[in-house]
Image 1 (cartoon, rainbow, N blue to C red):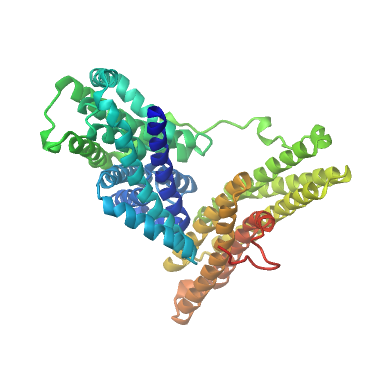
Image 2: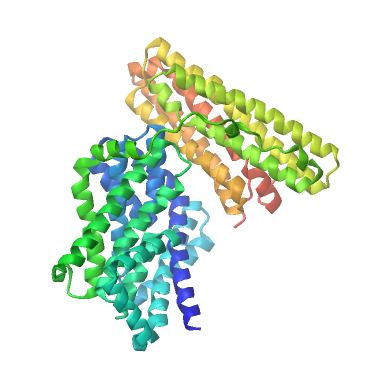
Length: 546
């Protein structure tokens, strides 16, 4: 029962942190992405924005993934991206400090208000705000559970001996802290756990410091693992952060172990000293590395090289003719192929702003070649599913085959929109030698980023098949439609003001917005089969049931 109580409290803590992050992502992800991308012109502003986003998401890893995607797409300079990630590390440290506050009445308020908002709220943002408050309340509950569960250890000689050993063998404690943070995918949860053990008087300060410094390295490693398949530009940012944060953590641990300086300046109690050391470490790292981010990016280029020529296996199809005799296996093959088609279209969408800003024949040809690949894959998928249907499927499997075929068709339509319409508009902009107005260009970039985020959400939905995510995606379709209408009105307002750049690019601007909306609609179609099955769709619109 003792180990079960500790495991349950730790599990609730990990899940509660994730609950808050999920609520913030669903309610405010678009705004956070906008802040991050727009702050890339100043390193200091980038660091502050990264810290603020990490505090909102309670995760420096989530910010690191977002920033890595921006850097890969060319929306944020690599040096500014690294500044954002370093700021996010400090933000996550500040979150741990805030969550250590013990106010018993606050738990009841957070849970009560959170549940009311989640159950009674009609708007998605209100409901997700309720989710965030519930998550915060459960974090405090889990910490109280952890304190109660570990109180018997105070009288345990074996537990005391183990903790004293970690205080002496700080290297082992450092490794354990790194592994634990990586396993739970949250340095915030790991630090909260370690500091709580210190507060209980169970863990010596020396052991806690080693564990917390290890958690800093493990937290930086999470993003590296999650971006192993990403483009080199994205991986360089998180790799540079790992080298800087992990290397600095190891160096600080070595200095503290060798010199054993007094830490009274960090606070009066071991708990305060442990959490303030965590903040001071990340603040010092940010201040020291901020002027050196350009140099760090250059060094990261030597660690992460561009891949060589792809092998022939990269373009092999997932459609296995031998699986046609087993309908479920064949449908799984078709699902994998459709996801790969969607990933190709998402990859085509990424460089569009680059091509509008600086026309590149090689980049445009790569998009055109990808579109041809999508057309070929769509035809193969359609024929594969048709052949599977001829074998005779029951109603449920036949509907799944039709849904996959429909999604593949929408993906191809999005591919054609990008390769034909958007590339044509970018080339026309270059040929005519005109440029968007500054506010117009910012609007297009923001709109493109939002559509790209929805495309990524749609691909994730194809794998998770989660109804809540499907509802969010369909609701986002209406939001995109409203945003497009608002941006069209803003453009017409600039025309009335006689802004020369807006007049010269009027048709290109409007058609670009329409094309992006069409791409978003194509990806949104992923959600409709899921919502049809759950009964969330009426004949033409999504129902408003809770």
